[in-house]
Image (cartoon, rainbow, N blue to C red; front, side):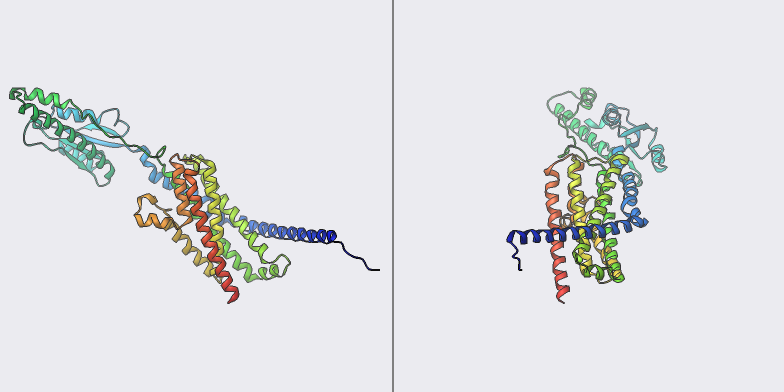
Length: 414
């Protein structure tokens, strides 16, 4: 007696087979991922490179470049004039506005000040010549001398900037006195006019301002920068692991299984993604807690970390598609890592580089991510900070994935 299968029964059986296939694939992916994760956790070098090294390098760079927030200058001052104009310069240097930046110590002569600067007791010196005040009304101005030490160039620039600013004030005073004399003031009034002019101040001044909400701290830039640099080494770990398993025959055994190579690739990609994301997140959280790094939008920072983890997965696939052996994978991944960090600006502030380097940084996922972290570090939040960087990372990842797919297709057909 024959039986006829109804359409509903056939659909139900098909759905059951499809569900079983998905379950088998998911189980295989989880098995591969857990195996790779256990291997990574047993690898102490991976722990050091991805989690410990970024923190150490971030701390060192924060110490090296973080001095801008605690900048202070020891300045020697020699007053050989003892007039109103020289007193005005000393009052400016000892003003409350400059107190956090400058500490002033008086010296009796230029030779004493020069010796103090030469020995590093003082970092720069300003020498006001005799007759400086009287020269305001004369035709021959008396220049103020700034003594510098090559070991303290920024301090010398500060001393020079303050002196030049005050010299501009003095020149304005000279012009005021000359105008008064031309208007009929008596020569006997010169001392009084000079003293009154020395007490005047230019009505207009400038002050520094930031387009963003706050100044970028060095640690807020170098924490993600170093985190990405070391996380990119994950590309080498994962690619070498792939070829190791290929050499040991693991890939052939998995390929012969019903789930195929796709489960292997998905499992390895999941571990690479999780490992990269954990490394970046650990670096940023530790930099926040230990070194005071700050970002305006934690969710934006998390989104950039996810984007970079995806890019690392795509780069790993590209290295595997190009290389043929473990050694080739190691060498190629090293080239990729250092090319990306040099072009992306991970070692120096990208904004301080030449225009061509800033443009090249836009062709790297880490360059886009650093742009986003820079905006977050200066107080910008939301899509204004991370919108374009996320699109840039996505575009870079898509291009890398496309090239990888083409290379794999060519390899299979070759």
